[in-house]
Image 1 (cartoon, each protein chain N blue to C red):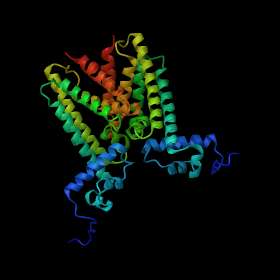
Image 2: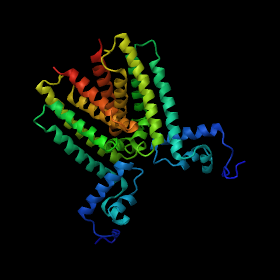
Image 3: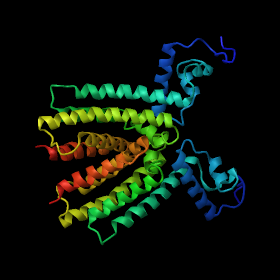
Image 4: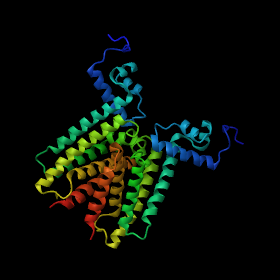
Length: 208
Length: 208
């Protein structure tokens, strides 16, 4: 035994508590932001002592990076689910995804937006660790959208003169901006403008 | 004299100190976010006692709303300056504005983004006052861009089949999203993708 290692406080760490902490943290951080979220509130939410938090995570920053990962995993599963729907042509799958997201934000009252976007606004300038996690996840999301656009290009539903990856980045980033404006307006108009401009104009106008 | 009114602490309020507090607050909030910015740091920055802050502002929230106003005033002056350049056709003026912004972000190392975007991500869900200020300012900015696009439509440089105000909202919101991604990537690529897609594709493709 390494005598220099400080004794852990609280019960022995277990994977279930770790997952619960991440889920509770995701909920709090999504609702209130990273800076405004205290560890105390998260441990209270799942009824574990505060000291035990540091049995699981080295720092709030390391915890924030894992919250990003969890959020991205969930979001990517949903996006991939929509884009795998072989019954629809590729651009319709992508449209169906954004329709679903817009409906979900309407149900929630046009608040909270995207956790990766929120970390980008609030945290990435101050944490290289979180910045790298956010950048990696955005790239993954964009890559999935790019694959869908490339499929539309192969099908001839979309002209092939623009790189699918640049177009995907622009669409993803524009959606993130539409979410910011949705929250400022507390209404659907920015999401509708996004869909109109992207699907009815930018992509539609480029069909063969 | 109203005996029920509490005595003010500190020196008598003056307009210059008020302006200095707003300027210092804008700098801190832009750099660190609203939740992470303490009043103490702001009063320390301009060397006034903390108690005097509340001689000028009823609350941190009211102060935040005035910080939005100040930022928007400065940003709107810059945008209007570029769009009033009668030596260039309207779409070139708008492009020059975004080129200037992209160059400015490159100089600053691709951090901080837009104060209105940051408030949208962090604060508007929790403050109706700040939400209304942010929404009003975004609408003003969008209105100025819409007027420029409408001029391009009258000149025949841009097809008139899309409402200039929806197009302006989409462009502004997409820029806000590009700024989030710029910070996550800490690089210019998202701003370049924005300019390519908006000016070379969306607007260019719609010229008569």
